[in-house]
Amino acid sequence: MAKNVVITGATSGIGEAIARAYLEKGENVVLTGRRTERLQALKAEFVEAFPNQNVWTFPLDVTDMTMVKTVCSDILEAVGSIDVLVNNAGLALGLAPYQDYDELDMLTMLDTNVKGLMAVTRCFLPSMVAANQGHIINMGSTAGIYAYAGAAVYSATKAAVKTFSDGLRIDTIATDIKVTTIQPGIVETDFSKVRFHGDEARAATVYQGLEALQAQDIADAVVYVTSQPRRIQITDMTIMANQQATGFTIHRD
Image 1 (cartoon, rainbow, N blue to C red):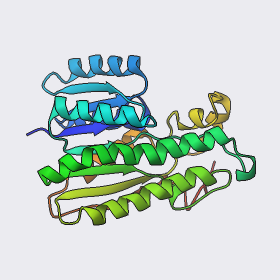
Image 2: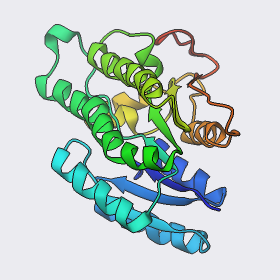
Image 3: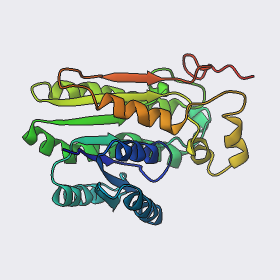
């Protein structure tokens, strides 16, 4: 029987790649994100490419707590049981010493990466507990393990994701629910373009001189983690580019 997979931040990058990977595996997907037109375009594409699976779309801004409760309730009503929740929505904004950091950028990262992830999880977790099954994937980052210059806030949010996952695993230990933190290193997506507020030239320099990870690499890892037998729980997976070491230590050609 096909799994029902909910993905936040599914309109591009890693989230979109995860949706494609699950569809290719024969699963059903629930796509959520802020860009309604992009959700509609993806649904049209996926329905045509994967006619035997279900594809649902729900506009969702995870920083809007009222919207989170309403949309998650709507998803449960429309879909029924949720087998996998992928908390992928997240972002970095800015790259500057903390004493110079833009306050709005700081608060947006906290609201999205931490509060939003926790709120979505809180809405879906009771139904998983009731069903005594489910798998929660929380998208962390190597930044949550190794802070780097100019990213104190972003690193702190991703450290919070890792610690939250660990606590969640303890709280659900008497159930068959699994919790995994995926911690990617440098991945070539629109991540840096968002970080630098649309400055494409500056964003491009992040990936110059090395073979960065691709969104598909992370999607494949997520599908692998959630395809293990009941007895196996992969708690953490850290994935770096070949020329990346601890933190933002990168060798460039």
